[in-house]
Amino acid sequence: MMHDFLIIGGGIAGLSVGAELAALGRVLLLEAEPQLAYHASARSAALYEPRYGLAPVVELSLASEAAFRAMPGLLSPRGLMILARADQDAEFRRDLLGFQLDEVPVETARARVPIINPDRVARAAMADHAWDIDTDRLLQDHQRRIRAGGGQIETRAQVVRVHRLPGGWQVQTAAGAVHEARVLVNAAGPWADRVAAQAGVRPLGLTPYRRSMARIPAPGGQDVSGWPMIFGCGESWYAKPDAGALIVSPAEEHPMDPQDAWADDMVLAEGLARYEDMVTEPVTRLMANWAGLRTFAPDRVLAIGPDLREPAFFWLAGQGGYGFQTSPAAARLAADLLAGRAPQISAPLVTALAPARFG
Ligand SMILES: Cc1cc2nc3c(=O)[nH]c(=O)nc-3n(C[C@H](O)[C@H](O)[C@H](O)COP(=O)(O)OP(=O)(O)OC[C@H]3O[C@@H](n4cnc5c(N)ncnc54)[C@H](O)[C@@H]3O)c2cc1C
Image 1 (spheres, rainbow, N blue to C red):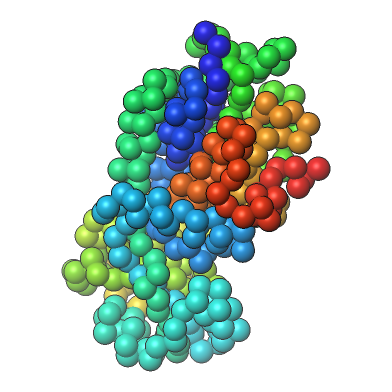
Image 2 (cartoon, helix red, strand yellow):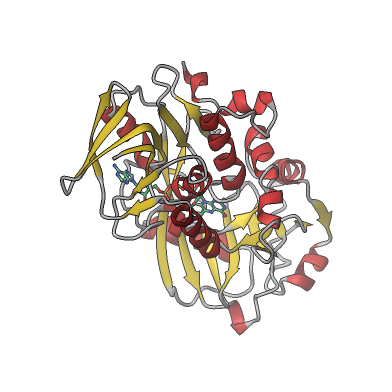
């Protein structure tokens, strides 16, 4: 059967665009792993902080808010806090501007997060505009919409060969299944450039960067549920309440080949030491650790649109550290472009996101 849209990748990118495309035609989504959302999409901090990233990313995140709000309870208040040492003035000022935060006395920050060490933290800033995203619910909802629209989702379906046909594409999976579609949507996350190369399409120069995470018990047995997401200024580490515990990340960006990433012990230890330096409670135990790949285009802006030379090859890649928070507007833009509809976002933003910018 000739499908209209064959999506490669069952993370948030593939599932969100699948949900939009199921209303437009026959969708087949192929995911290599036994589970959907196994890679980056299972390892995120699940935050919606629309002021995070470069201007086009911020615009896309802001354009996503209405769709999130249309699902009552999907976002829940978290808030944001930045902490700086006395020698971090320049970075602190940059963060204040970038995240649009208000500086507050350290004592005010301590009233919210009592483990802040006043001997180490010289300046603090806070904002309300950050929310937890219920990512499980979002992913489930997209799967339901794909199936309700008659679309198919197949796991254990790694695409290993891609052939151009006169009216579309033929792909073969590692298990030997063959599928055909009019349009190929590349939502393969860290593997997106490899999928392009398989299809004879020029890669964009995407780079996956590892970011590690540790889960630690609530410091001092405190109730952390109302704490904000806390960043060491200049994104030198971050910590966030998570199901009664705290997740702490060294916030590293370590370039890697696409793979099932795992946390680097040394990087984790150094990151935890940066966190510990700013708080009064030592880390006594790790409950778990993991890592995920954040995949960036060379200019750190997402790539959404048809390939410049091969219009039936559609890119939805380079989501970096913003794949969940941009997903509603990104998927909607992809569907608008594939349907030939006028995009809902501004024309300059469409151009800023177009893969054609890489020539
Ligand atoms: C530690 C960390 C914290 C983060 N925090 C946030 C946050 O707070 N907010 C936010 O918005 N974002 C955050 N992100 C970023 C977000 O997780 C990613 O941008 C997003 O998950 C990327 O989704 P994706 O679908 O593009 O990629 P992935 O989830 O990696 O999915 C790509 C899928 O494609 C499949 N695939 C690849 N090649 C093939 C093939 N040949 N055949 C079939 N399938 C294939 C893979 O198996 C994979 O499942 C974070 C990321 C990390 C690592």
